[in-house]
Image (cartoon, rainbow, N blue to C red; front, side):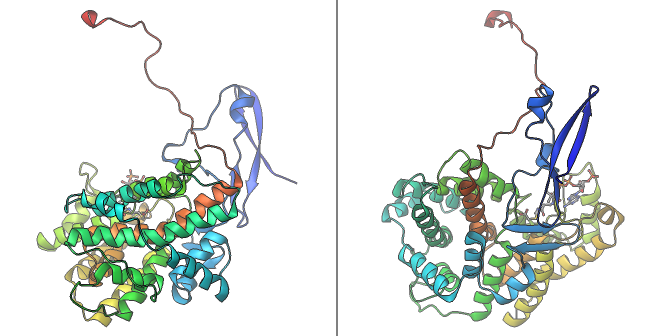
Length: 428
Ligand code: CMC
């Protein structure tokens, strides 16, 4: 028998259905509450307690630190799969067979070029432009060279749109980097795998043959997998809500990239390194910065700490911390900020402020340290996150469109002035 929840208001009881997920998560479906109660809505600032959809893509249990894509644990995927397989899994629901994976790879390769006119748009940006702004703009600009909307009823159109953006996005990401570095743009090489090719497009020098470093390729592959989806976070919700108006895939993604840029979301990976550098330059006094983070009069927050959903630990952070040690060891890189990061973590884990609020290191706390060791400049950390999150955004957008979800349009409680007469300018 299906469960119901009851809301009592003004002596009237409203019965609302309870929806149960496959991991026994419960949600009260309030869709009919407003209509039946004559105007009652729920209010939930920042959607801290509101589900926006039912989704079969990613399962996250913040209390127990569990993250699974389509039922597979993040630990196992990071260990055994590669990024393209995970992308396929997220988007289409199952791990690909060898044949499906080869076709996906070949279809992506066939689209891995960008209209030459896009270069002229890139040219218009100053070198100092943040690559997240450049990426968002170029992703949006792709609409001019591709169909602006996708017919969700056509499997072929959906597939083509997905393959196109999976192919062109790494090109744009690498180009955003090369533009900043003053390097000629590169189209990569069809013979390379997805991640290998991306790294070649990023780092190939015009006067030297590109030499792959397997440690770097494997580390980036793992980082991309760890970032590939995280259910209804800020940028994914943005992609869904923009897509819910039936705006095209590229337009929805462009909006998601902008949402990811913020320092409370994906931009935290850049903010963490900048914070660690600032602490180092200030003599490495971690206690001082712990004090600032706890001081409610001080806007400073310990970047890379805390999470809306994880109230135990972020499983991605655990994997990345181990990987950071391994990668720095393998590459023979010594980075003093790693020591500062570990010191901060130790202090926070035994500090009542952080313990009481269940604030643990999140995915962004150690990722910047690895990116830096791999030769990725600080401003490119968030674009790397975007590249990793791309399949998640696509999967969520596709699921939303295939389900025919209604346009996203929250309600509000109006708190402004009541109706009043217009005053002409002389009387104001
Ligand atoms: N440093 C100091 N205090 C913090 C921090 C922090 N990093 N994070 C949360 N708090 C405090 C906050 O002040 C509040 O205290 P009080 O109850 O006394 O008012 C309490 O902890 C709860 O925080 P909140 O801001 O209400 O929690 P939220 O769920 O709205 O925000 C968050 C989550 C991730 C935005 C926040 O923890 C934060 O700003 N962290 C730093 C930025 C960061 O690392 N972001 C990356 C998130 S993970 C990757 C991603 O999403 O892309």
